Image 1: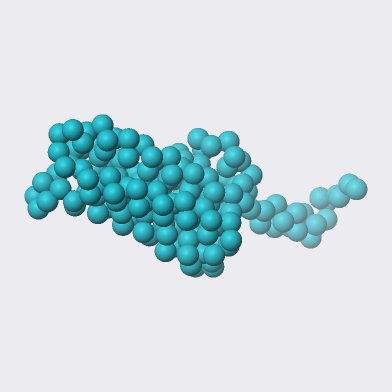
Image 2: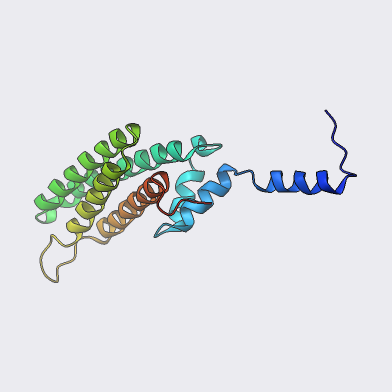
Length: 172
């Protein structure tokens, strides 16, 4: 069916309908602008082809997978530097973070956003506690600090998505 845009009312209606269509790029932008690291968020989605035309739920799954990969990489990093210090507590904390991220996956599948918030917050706490586990005034290796900050940023993306799914700060 051909619609003539000579009619001003039809023309305005077509503009309204086309501008109200929500694209995945807009959704990703809305989500990422609410995170603690919008650049990390945007890069994590744009590096994954599944994010094209993805729903909020799919973006949640992508974010959880990214955080799980990051936590696994941090655990490997901790094991590689543990020869030079006591990293037992950090290793335990990242194992806990991994367990929490696995629970995030299940909570998202069950649409239990309260539990999702709880588990992702736990993973973020586990990562930040590792940073402070070396003792007062003692810093861990810089690459561990950077990896921890990245994981916390990836977890924050999950938290923003969970809040959007539960109606808190829903992107418009």
